[in-house]
Image (cartoon, rainbow, N blue to C red; front, side, top):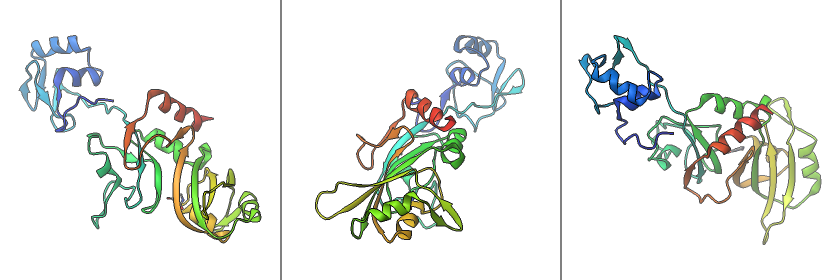
Length: 247
Ligand code: URA
């Protein structure tokens, strides 16, 4: 995680060479002093700033490719944002909520425009794959506010499997939550990832979703993070996500 890379994405050349695995910072300085490093065809100088991925860096005439550091962010997505990196219609996207992140991260799995809660953003494609593929059984947990009456038979229906798009989907768990007032809230855990899955499951048992909040992805929970805010994941949290996905 390189938080010191400036907003234009530039970096000191010796640091870039060290991160790319060419040499240690000190040895990279020596390579530069020996005139063995060029930037866009010109001999590099100590302390020079370069733009990884844009400038052509050669060491002994061999190109050096930047190693991308992995960045892991958790965002408390508010409703009214698309979990995509771009929208041709100009609607708000989640990336606009993490302007400080200069690396090219993408959302892991989707949350609907009107859904809220935990969204992981990363440039680690492998972890994204592990977390989203149902075969890795990482449970996503949702608190769903629904319209209708409390009816335990509907929970039993959810638990005994619901056919969605011709395939039987089992929830990992489902139960009513104690709700203040007249709100009816269900806690649902699922490891499948079909589009609008939770809404479809609720609809299948006769409930319409009024609000959907993702509270957990495997071991990672949203609690303590305000709506619209983000933070980096700790190394421990990243390790726990990998562990959860590998079983
Ligand atoms: N299931 C849904 O229906 N919507 C979401 O945003 C996430 C899961």
